[in-house]
Image 1 (cartoon, helix red, strand yellow):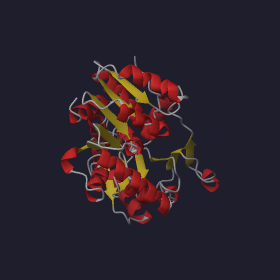
Image 2 (tube, one colour):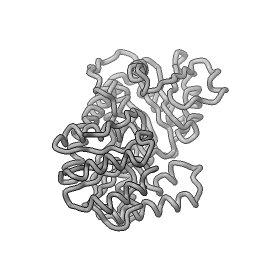
Image 3 (cartoon, one colour):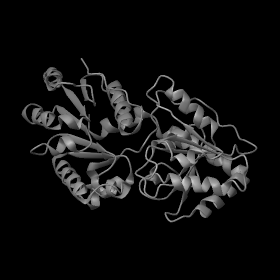
Image 4 (cartoon, helix red, strand yellow):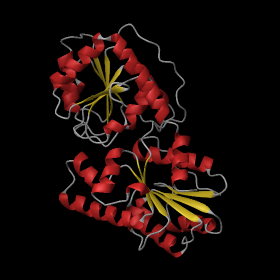
Length: 363
């Protein structure tokens, strides 16, 4: 008996769902308990499933912080044998334990990284999260991260042992990888794409300024925006087109596919980026990305192969110059398009990611 995961295709929750599904596919000799958000309305239901698991050999995965204390308590009282391995998405659960257990943490960021990415986090909240991370890492056996940035944070800030860390890498999570062939083009489409769930943090105003600067060179240029609804003054600009796409809806993935195929260049001007699955998603359709070389973004882009990384302090004029050069050099543009597809496909086999997790956990 298994508890079906809640399917969430966006962001961290989407990554957890897809990876957990693949772990279950590869780990067929046991039961996998998933504790996703909203799946357990009452603690006794979760307790029931954990009690059923305890008689067998199992891997427990959890990412529901609301039940961290209850799950931790149950793990400490019951799942003490080496025959059980726990994979925790995030640090909240593991911080509730009283001692080191056979637990592996998988995370995309620590408090130190969040402090850089989110300007609105208060110092007191950063300190609270830091203490959670510190205690969780002390209680864990191994650590899996998505980027080199987070790996280096674990080593330098939390003194985690390098040989106990596995860098998994980000991946695009669709139900299936689109089977398309990247055909060389003779001229660009002149359609920029900007994706963000947080307009300010992703530097949406910069994207609009860049679009306006490029209009002097490309009269037919369009800026397609998906995710966070831009400010009202942006909505009224000619050439700016917004897309309200929810990947969880029946037509959501197809609409996103259509958007990626419509555009020819993804721009990611955030001053600090933990990483972005959207870069790999776009790459599957041969859409290269231009981004600042800051934070964890370098793990999503091979510079000059699948996209272009610009300096952290690069200006609108710098970006304008790079895009003008790219649009005028169609051979280079086509190489980036093919490179984006190849890199994204190579990074997005979720079964390979799941196998890497199980191998690292020695299961």
